[in-house]
Amino acid sequence: MKRGTPGFVGARLKEAREARGLTATALSEILRVTRQSVSQYENEQQTPRPEVMRKIEEVLNLPPAFFSRPVEDEPGDRKIFYRDMESTTKLARARMDRRYLWLNEIADYLQQFVSFPPVDFPRFETPRDPTEISWDSIEVMASKTREYWGLGEGPISNVVSLLESNGAVVARGMMEADELDAFSEWREWHEHNETPYVFLGADKQNAFRSRYDGAHELGHLVLHRNIDKKHVDNTRTHKLIEKQAYRFAGAFLLPASSFANDFYAPSLDTFRALKPKWKVSIAMMIYRSADLGFVGKEQTRRLWINRTRRGWRLREPLDDALDIEEPRLLRRAFELLVNEGVQSRDAIRFALPYASSDIEELAGLPPGFLEDKPAPISLKAYSRKRNGGTNRQPQGPGEIVDFRTTGDT
Image (tube, rainbow, N blue to C red; front, side):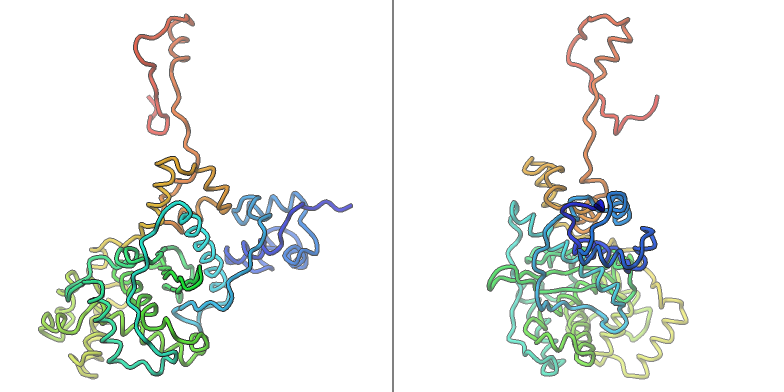
């Protein structure tokens, strides 16, 4: 009888492989088995031998429990707003789809113990067909969203905090694909109860770009909540949807009237001076100025040319002057569970059998947070040896040293 792995769930192997961005062929080469064997594992026509199973766990960096978990029914026709449908590779999309489902499960787990802020997003009667959304209506909805949240007409201090405080679950992680800057979804987790999710890419490490990404995804959540999914999947209408979200982001971050008051000359130097105040890129200000008619087509063209000549196409001045806005909701929830003794690190890892590094990244936790902490070590025994092995009791309380913070002497 061939040896195998009892309880092995083939669908979990496929899930793990895709979450790591590997093709079946690539995984087979790493495991030194045939491509057909990987396919048979995933389809449960056979299970891996124990030594192959250990290699799978090592290569995919997932605990044994992950591969024996029952598979729940995957969500059906989800309407996820990805930035670029054409150039994004199937492998990159599959990787983020899997990791996004892990994020969903992490958030669901936390909400068993912690009450998240209630969802408080403005809801407009937007059409199901994006071609019926006008540019003027986008400007109005961006303004009304600011009004709904009481933001006034000035710069927004922190886009991520704004989303989280109004009930969105926000995560930030590596996308490993240039085309995947961010994505979002209204996730239905209970009948007539939806939660907005926003996933921001950490690859580019640019605070101004990340703020735009957050506002762009907010545009999808506000403008496109009601549209039919077929329009998201259609190449032509998808491009329109993206343009609409871009217009919303500009109108939300740079309100027309207050930005107009600051716009004193159509020049790159003007935009550079305004960048620290409004916390948006020079590129966004060029786009916004063109949208509002502050500059004509020829002026806009010259601005783009001069921006390139100055070497600002890939990196602009002051890009390092602003800290990246980090999500805090999930991180604080985990810290609360652990610090208050509601759940131990062991219990968390048991309930969420992913790699600790995956949970830490998706929840914005510091690396190593979910690893076991070594207990403080008493020097009492060492003191007895140092004192000649006597049983003399030390005076006062025993000395405790935490070797995590103590260096060599």
